[in-house]
Length: 157
Image (cartoon, rainbow, N blue to C red; front, side, top):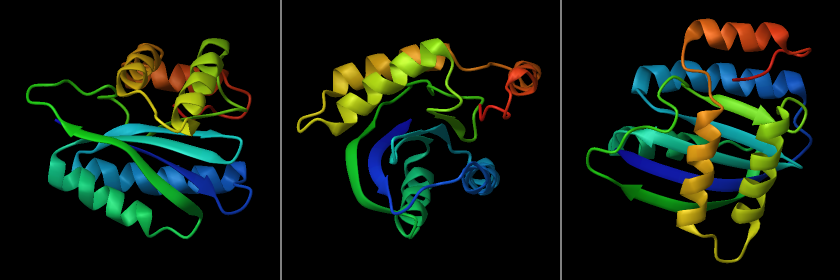
């Protein structure tokens, strides 16, 4: 399994509708490439984890890097681990932002943002937080639909 995490800055404010469009497009393309992951947006900073086959993850990242809606793209970590399990096997592209995070997710989101913003991010700490975050992820389509229907604005899980 190949993993790549990066951070970038939004070039402008990303509206809820624009984020929804980004996610819909990403989910379609990621499903075709068998790439899963997580996109976090906090205070204009994107944090993303991509996971899957090395070739597919790198091709997905190359497409993302060309998107003009963000800048200052910095890869935090990329590594391959034989036999590793995905953090988000049921998310073609899960997403949580400040407005839609549950209480538990909000704390994890702040911690991930802090790690991603540090000069020397800790891979161990990042992986611990991703494991904790994945524990908050729905594991079935039915659970995803329940969470979306409970959210006032349709949580992007």
